[in-house]
Length: 339
Image (cartoon, rainbow, N blue to C red; front, side, top):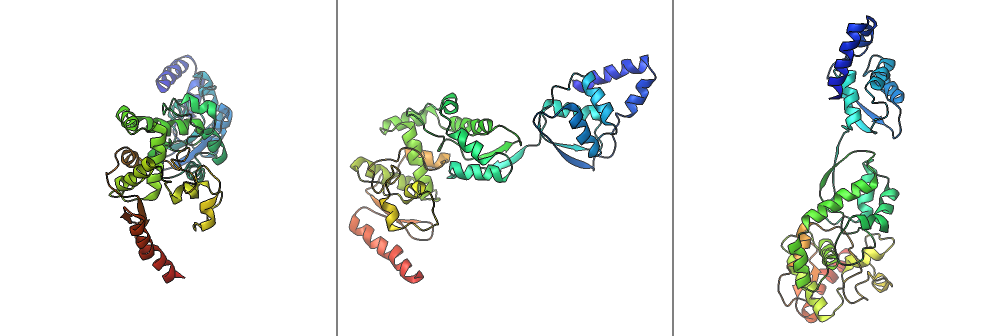
């Protein structure tokens, strides 16, 4: 529409004045479509500053003609900041139309299942899509959280657990709250009313269900084990036995070097499920839909324990004696071999 209006204006000018031909000659493409350039327009940049950038990149013939065209079209106050891709075969009217419409470059970013808020912030910062601290501050802003209408029954202190792991298309210079709102929206689309009803049947709020799902997500990457591990945790919750989940302790540690030590299991934290009976106060990561489903549909069993076999799988036990034998077999023997 913008380009069409400009063509009408130029037609009138050409009929009324010979100087219009001179202006029009400055508004022709300068090269070929093979000549590609990426331009980053800063927040608050003026039309003149944008024209200077375009001219410097050899995308337009004349910066003054571009400014004249933009002011004529009333676009001088409609510049949308962001990262744009242009090529030499574009005429200035097309370039201006893209800037006014905000046709910015979209960057693909995949948030893996089980990433924490901090890891997501690091990933977005690394890809230059968000400032790490600004992103994390937004995830903890109670006023902003309230606007998201999570409807999870409990008061949510931060958005851990609700930044849904998926592949997104984000533009540079998007405000952190828009990035976060997009991820939370995907969470709300994924978690259904049936899920909420199922959580209630299990005696859980949706916040507790997401919390449990996050623990399951961190305990195993194997699809065939998620519901079994969920069953273990449900059994422990029902019997009021501490979950004794290492990932919850790791989440509570300010620094973790990859080795969980005996002293770590006694730290004073509501996330230390070796000391606290029941679920931690909130999610320890952002679970995917499979982990949420596992939390809501545990596999019935008598199992109360599981231990890693050091190959990505786990050995499940119903009694402490069987569990201790599995620990000796898979953990203590492994430690002796590596010591």
